[in-house]
Length: 197
Image (cartoon, rainbow, N blue to C red):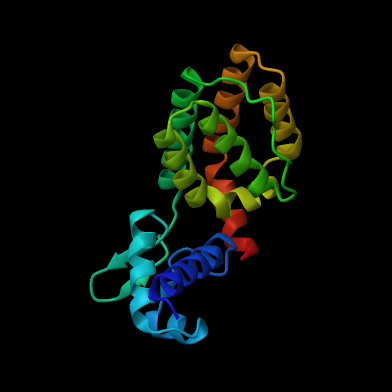
């Protein structure tokens, strides 16, 4: 088998497990066990874990290997603020895209798609890469936001509608409110995350 294909398959599999919340934040990721589970050698597993470190989805701890990063209230607030800053930056250059993609069903995927659409509309590939990275780091909490915040689906609908019928001022207001609301509820969102795992 082509080692490049194996490395990509292993990376995709481990990343999907992380995004699907197969592990709690702080969980140690054992390369030997992952290699066994994925029917591969340790080399592509270690390569994938190092790549995921670069994306902020995995961290290495001296003497104890690879772990999912622990998430606390302040770091979650920082992630929401970073997401807001990226979104506002992308919106400066954003132009409407008349071909709106189909809306995914899970709310977390819907939020990821919405912010990706904003980044894509800026025409700057770096906005999109950065937005995808922050979306991956927020993906697990986006799955549980509705447990801590009422009206998440309606809020996403308003944002999607604002992209479909652009009014930049309204869109800026909604993006700001979206992120401020989550920053204020960061503690409750984290409790929901740890409770639903």
